Amino acid sequence: MAKIVAVFNQKGGVGKTTTNINLTTALSLEGYRVLVIDIDPQGNTSSGFGIEKNNLEKSVYNGIIHGDNFKEIILTTSYENLHILPSHPDLAGAEIELTNMPQRELRLKNSIENIKSFYDYIFIDCPPSLGLLTINALAVTNTVLIPIQCEFYALEGVSQLMNTISLVKQGLNPHLEIEGVLMTMFDSRTNLSNQVVDEVVDYFKEKVYDTMIPRNVRLAEAPSYGQTIFEYASGSKGAKAYLALSKEFVQRQE
Image 1 (cartoon, one colour):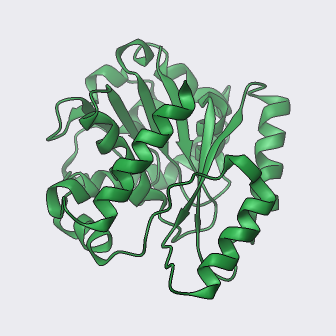
Image 2: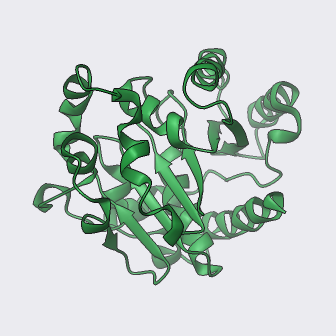
């Protein structure tokens, strides 16, 4: 049965989607069967895998709102072991549509039941907000991976995030845990980056990954070509960092 990991931080611009795309790709290259679920209405993860969101006949929206079978919506990628449940702009209206639905917080959980056995890992790319789509992700996931950017306001909103996780744990998902905390856009040359890392380690302790994702132009450029970092610049520092992260991620499962 797949381990389900939500990649989440309600603060935008922290490398959440970049991490979802490249960590899942790295794991698939290691031979693991991986599914990416894009429940962010912006659909950047879907675009990052070269999917034309607007041309999709069905997306994760159809599964969550209309109860369509996820098996019929899953798409392959250019990586043999990596599949994706893509997002569509229609998902932007899902928050309103979910409001009056029965078991509105468990729509994703119910939809995912019949596909969990096909994968080793399922990663969910959450919106940068604390709405019903994110609650659906937190209700079904085993753990939360939190990317944090090495910037001045890095810990801003973290207490709110932790409070949300605590509330979901109490009410919907008693087994929810933090998978790990990933420092992104790290620049070892600046005192600020190092100070932020120290603060985050002080707060999250051993949950912080040893691997840090460097500030890397290639990582920023790759999505605009609909490519992962391994297609776009396999020898870059960004690619090497995500490969290292995948190994550390797997090692922590043991």
